[in-house]
Amino acid sequence: MIRGLEWIVAALLVAAATCGCHSDRPPSRGPIEQARQELEVRYRENEAGFFAKDPDRVMSLRHPDFHTILPNGNVNSREQMDQRTRDFIGRIERFDSLSERITRLSLSGDTAMAMIDQSTVRQQRIEGALHEVRTSVTQRESWIKTKDGWMMWRVDSIQPGTTLLDGKPLPPSP
Image (cartoon, rainbow, N blue to C red):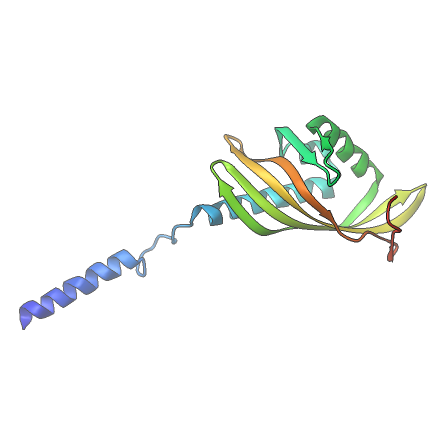
């Protein structure tokens, strides 16, 4: 009887030690959860760069081979996106809000593919007049893990949402 009881106690001790229930260590995170947390930090850094109206800060999160593939199939190089970012930020008086939310995330080696819902509310000059502009987009953003951390490498699968100018939808582009 004692032997059976000793065996049960030993089994319970082994089970408690291996389940992590009594460990002082935080539970280990899987690679997707780790990447998500690291990318969320990068997205907050990206948002901070836009709020600061600092294109160098924004572009510092972009990989040297960064590029975008537009819905029409045209590709914009890193240099083109650098100029586009500078022009965009130059028209903004201030950002009221900017949100980048990961809705799906997958990993393939050192590359993370994040589907992002992005929205902005900003005060922007158009033909000299100040307007409120609200935009949204869903797009895939691919990031490469480098020695300096995650760097945005490519944006594609861009699905623009509605753009509101002073609360009214813009007419469709020709």
